[in-house]
Image (cartoon, rainbow, N blue to C red):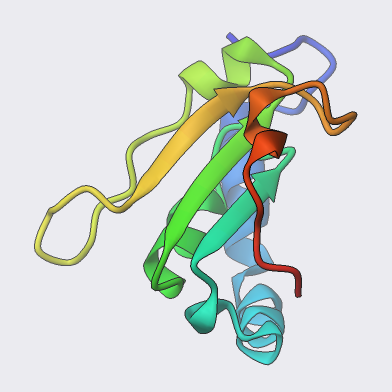
Length: 107
């Protein structure tokens, strides 16, 4: 279960759906398709992680500090049902996570 101060998983996924058109435009403008390594910082339940994995030609790391939220993420699948290249990591944005030993594309 995610942290009690967070909205419900259903609400987070609904919010991600509502914002999909605007996010799609922003990701295209940012050139996400060319990125080889993408960090989904503060991924929560992974409502956007699957989209990032579909849109990039690289690999996505979904990072969140709440273990419960990460446990609620679902593997991203492409149209043929194959799992997209993404992984979950527990940590925060302060740089103490092993995730930050890697480099990511800056957009």
